[in-house]
Image (cartoon, rainbow over all chains, first blue to last red; front, top):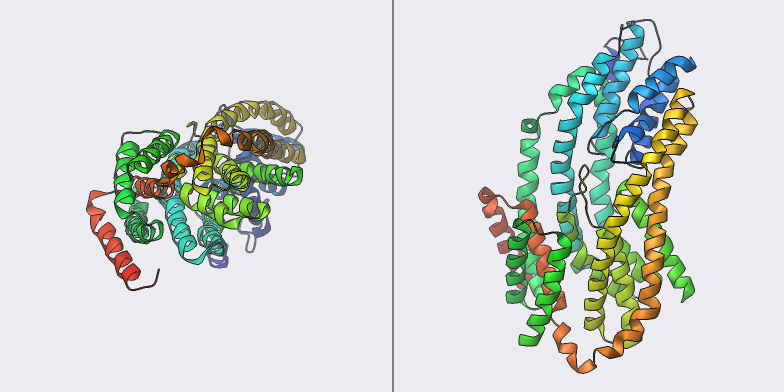
Length: 263
Length: 230
């Protein structure tokens, strides 16, 4: 983060070496925005989705840039509008918006259109990349590793699981805000599916490898490799057919009764 | 008994708040929450077992956008508590696990409906936040946002308290309906639920060009198991 800010210091408008007169965002403001990012989904609703949570993240920036209540009210109202993203990826938007709000005040932009356009353009990619990367891949991968550790080590594995899952995420949430601030509008270029394809491939391959590893451990631990394997196959087919987790679990429970009767 | 129910209910509030509304540190995930429930109720082994078996299957439902999803975390917590209380009352672990998980799935489905209602309720916070922004009151915006996390916490308290009470006081009374002679029917519950974990993982990670990774993992696993590590 320091490295990013040091690089940022060479650019216009950074607090440590201001080249343009006007209000500046400080590093502490970005850290405050980061801390508020843990509550970005608190007030999620069907009307504006992350809108209120995003405005809450921008509060430290608004306080810093707008000592005048009228300016602050305009800024806050702007960010209370509809916004949606993956919660861990929303930091990119918060950082970039901080930079643009700063520039808008320093350079006296006639309107706020660029800021609205940036948020609109970021919402889609931030949601889709984040959902794939974190919800579909990283969370299940960490869970598989946690389950594997739990089978071997017992309850102590919980701590390892929490560290493994949260360490990279806490770091990533901070990095995204600081890098978003550094890039400003250019953050849009950073958000392409192709840029994250390598990480996705790597996570998917690791996930499958751990699934194989866990299959061997689980079959050994629970003692019925044929039943475990055949249930896995049936569940895979049901999930592929878009059955919900609840219905697959109910099917599994019925299958367990059937297996119990037969075996 | 009441103390146990109170503690599990509080844990349910924390689980619901961590699920989507705040932090999302996965303290709410079945692996952690069920083990914590086991620790509170004095049976860490059963808690951990329920957590291991339910951790991955619920992850297939992604909490994205406006998608409706079951409250798998809360359902798993109630499942673990129910399984432990039933085991204590009946001394039949496999039967208790089966009933606990079935009950947890029902609670998760009802919890999903609760999430939808909570998100509708959150819309009211927007009106308040609009007024706060009008007055440039930043503390008021923070309070409005945190009220959403409080809604989630209350939803968790309500659902866990209600269904926890049923699991503690009603389910054990129904145990004699299923005679102990039928217990062998439930003996396959653990391997089948573990199979669901693998099926869910395959679904999430499956790419045809990645089969080599699955085979490599299987080979490594069998080597480790037969090598005596597991």
